[in-house]
Length: 244
Ligand code: OAD
Image (cartoon, rainbow, N blue to C red; front, side, top):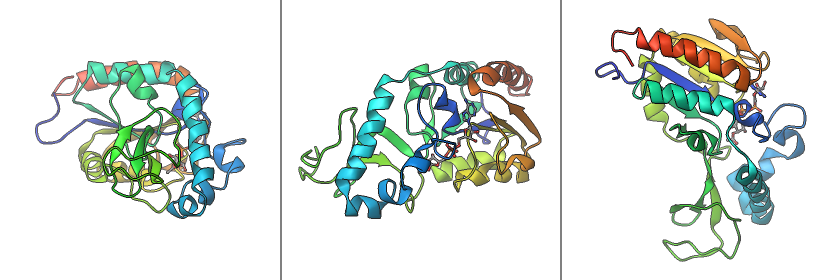
């Protein structure tokens, strides 16, 4: 049960590092996606207007990778934590993959979802694991030429912000997992939770540019450091006056 009127006790923010061991690339590390592609070309509304084929090909390649990928022990650990303490744990992810869901977790996808297509004309959204194409007709308005991934591009508004911000104001614990903290507003969530009184922890393979703001840091691959951390959190949440 969550604290009456206060939402989840623990807010978790995840990034590309959570899915790295499932074979999905990160963005800013050596060989990361943004070292091989110009994000202005493939992750902005202007890039899509300029060259929709380039953008669709980029996301079709990412969909193909995701179709082959499997959740890892880090996704499974988070799913277990949420199962044990359903209303106490909010998972917010910047990842557009569905590996948390396939592991049994529920997450707010603030940067959208790769396996969803959006019509650029009427904003209809539908589930779609196949290739994006210029000829694809929108099931709602019937027009073709507007199919784009339902992901948030630079210059667009992240999703679920009011819900996330409300949770950050009241949580007692905040964890940043496998994210560089380089992209805002997500990069500011840890500081926001700390200002509101939460104990904040960073779980990452390496130090990040925002590591100095955390009370505590756990270093290592997510699949190794998450399972023991989850066990510890289950204990802490169970000891809270509201239980799990
Ligand atoms: P980044 O590529 O910026 O950072 C990935 C982080 O994961 C780094 O801090 C790594 O140290 C860490 N990492 C890598 N492998 C790991 C592992 N096995 N275990 C634990 N940590 C590991 O990716 P994000 O922070 O997710 O947005 O990037 C944020 C946003 O930037 C993305 O959602 C995407 C991108 O542009 C949009 O496209 C809108």
